Image (tube, one colour):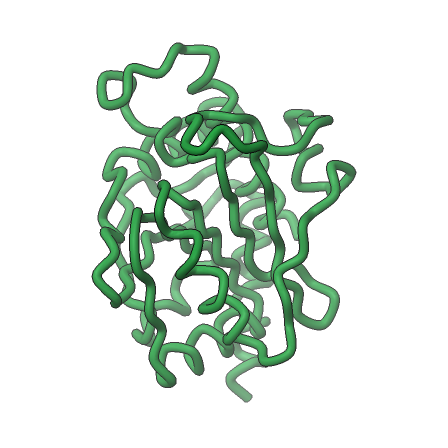
Length: 218
């Protein structure tokens, strides 16, 4: 019954995206474990404004925070998480995420440098037996309004590795995206925070816009 209600609600969200009448809601995910879930405070508001201005979307720019285990999670079709450190989902939080993602929600986790060894095993606990898989460059998420033929753009160097996008799939649907060695969220922040060149910030914002468009059109 819960899943049916979530799917009905998601259908109305898709209609609002198409008709541009009711603002779409996205949120920042607050998690436990000691990691700085609150990093990059200007990133999501800036991304929402960019999508509204450049893609004709209607995303609410006042971005709330929602806890992993809260029933409020189901009010947001898209949630984003970031940080530099530890991430822990307890059993109740895993159950909540499982219902949320299985019912149509979407999670984007963006490593802000240091999250990697913690977030991977936590994501794979959501649907037992499921594994993160690297998305090929041909995946539609890279080819929405903006085309990224080589996959994720490189925003910050970190360890100098190539950026990678990993997906968690459930019943054939991409339900979670984990972006590694790119730091998209830093690129979405106000320019004076990280002093990234405009062309670098533009790449980050375009990729973020692709992610949101993919989520709200699928």
